[in-house]
Amino acid sequence: MGRINNQITDFINHWFGKIRLVKPKSADHNEFVARYKRFDQFVFHWKDSYSKEAIQSNKEIVFSKYFGFGSHLDFIKRLIGQPASAFENQQYNIIVLLYIINISGHKVQFELHFHDKKLFSISYTYKSVDEAARKSILNSLLDKQGLSGAADLSNKIIVDPYGNGLLIEQDQTFAVHYLSPQSKVMQLAKEWSGMRVG
Image 1 (spheres, rainbow, N blue to C red):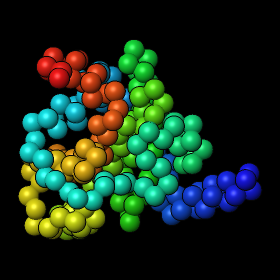
Image 2: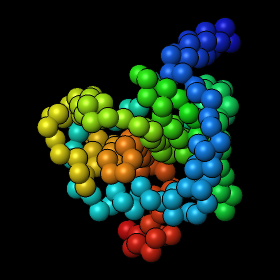
Image 3: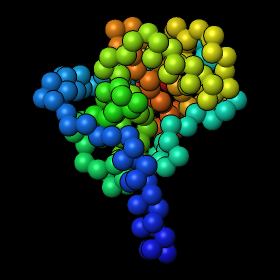
């Protein structure tokens, strides 16, 4: 059994090798730490998603073949390696890992958010992409969810049959966020932001 697990781990490490980890600059670290100094940054996506119109997808929202929502922090670190930076909010038991990766020639900040050491959200923030690349990424995401490439995503969130959310930011930055409703963070976010829970 141990040999099979090692083979799986080697295969996964090889696959992640194709998504090249990039040496982070100090500016990446500083920007990351500044963003998560306050708890409202942890709940931003949750609060924001409540006000958006849901686009229903019949396909489960999946961001990786090798791990998913609820994966343990230690497993992710063994899988991908040590992060470029990490931030911990001990009061709310939340840890965010930051990796700088290269996807198809694009520098991307890859964040994994954990509550009680279980993955509840991930984000891909593209540092600089032109309009053609944005359109290509959007079309790819929509196609993956069985939605029309012409779908208007402004002020909307894609939701799968399990309640998982796919949120795309296209204002100052271009970012893709995957959110799990199964995490206690949703409840925590509602309480923290003064929203009625129920």
